[in-house]
Image (cartoon, rainbow, N blue to C red; front, side, top):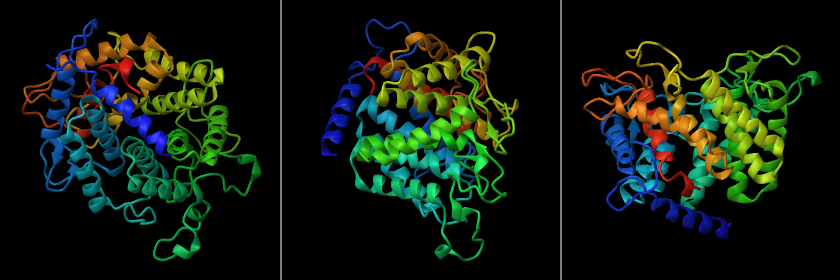
Length: 401
C-alpha cells in the first residue's frame, strides 16, 4: 500500500508542474484560458460560496445560512483536491482539511444516522470522494470513513442498530436483497420510499467508489463488486448502440426509465473507463466512449457546448442539477488522458471557453454557459461549480493522472 501512495505522490508532483511559473497557459496549447484562469475561477468560487467559519459551502452567494445539500458538497471536496493537484499550493490542502472537518461537524460521517443520511447515493458520492482523498494524501482517516460508508451502503443497517425510524428494508442494503430472484443484482437507490428503484445515480458511483477503494487497498473484493454491479447496470440501464444511460429501473423485467442526464452519462463513462484501465477489456472502453458520444451528440447546444440541465431559471437556487457539469469534470480526464480518447478535448475546451468568457465581475460562472450573469444576481453553488471544476481538470491534461 505504501508503494501505491508514493507513486500517487509522484504523479501529483508532475501535475503540479502543469502551469508555468507565471501562471500562463502551457506552451504549445491552443485553448483561450490559462492555468491562472483556472485558479482565478476556483478562488472566485470559494470567495463567493465557501464559509470558513463553518467549513462548508453555502447554497448560494447570499450566504443566508442555507448550505449546499450534503451530496453536492462531495463534488466541492473533489474540486479542492483537483486545485491542489494543479497547483501544489498548501492553501488548498488546508482547505481540504477544513472542509472535511466542517462537513463532519455539520452533516456527520455517521453513516447510520437517518437524520442526515436517507438515500444510498448521497452516501456513495462521499464514499468515492473520500477514497480519492486517501489516494491523494495517504491519510488513514479518509480510507477508514470511506470503507465504512461503502460497507454500510452495500450491507445496509442491521437490526442491532434499531431505534426510531429503523427500516427493515434498509437491513437488506442497497445491493440485491430481493425476495424475487428475477429482479437480480444492481443497487437500490433508497429504503425510505419503499425501495422504489435501482437508479443509475447509485449503481455507477458504487462502481467508481469500488474501483477507487481497490486501488487504495488492493482488496480484490472491491474489484469483483465493481464488475458485478457494472454487469447489471450495463444490461439494464445502458444502450450500447446509442450510449444512452437510463435514469432507473423500477421492476425486474420492466423497461428502464429512459431519461438521460449528464451526471449519469458521466459516471457511466467514468466507471467503464476505470474498468477498462484495470482489465484491458475493450468492451468497457467502447461503453465509455458511447456514453460520452451521447453527451456530445444529445446534451449540447447548437454551438456545440454542454447544454444546461434542470431549471431554466437561473434564480432557482435550489436546483441541484446545476452540479452535473462538475461531476462530468471529475471523470472526463480519465477518458481523455488515461484512455487516450482526445477526440473529446475540443468539446470540453469550447464549453469552458464559453462559460469563462461569460463570467461576471465577481469571477463567477453559471451552468448557462452562453449567458452572462450580472454581479447582483444570486448564484447557487451548484450552478457556479461547473466551469471551475472543468477548468481544474482540463489544464495540463496530458500530465494529469
